[in-house]
Length: 151
Image 1: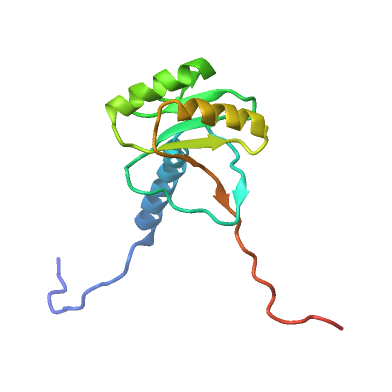
Image 2: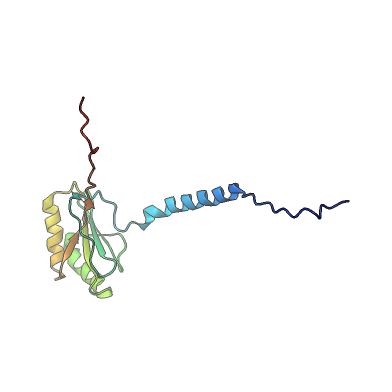
């Protein structure tokens, strides 16, 4: 038996297969977890040209109004729990007792009539909070091609 002792070369090949396996597993984990991170009931938000960021106060209490007009509360005490209009004030007061000073955000599906939105906001205003935020998605501005393309 002979050993090649005189060779001092270092082999620096990278084995890519385990790296790709790890990256694919992480990708699958993120794809599964990401939808779970959305708070409140999923709704299609209306679009707005100017959207301001939520101010200070921490993670807001979410009040979601779905396409069928049902109202859902998601906060510290309630997690995606349906509430009736006559219960909104009492349930929000429970949330505000658990976390005083936290903002309230109302997410309404774009297909819900304005009359329904007004009813929900009026019920929220009975809690005497300083302000209510309405959620919207920002309209992405499309840039023009930069030149005139006429022939």
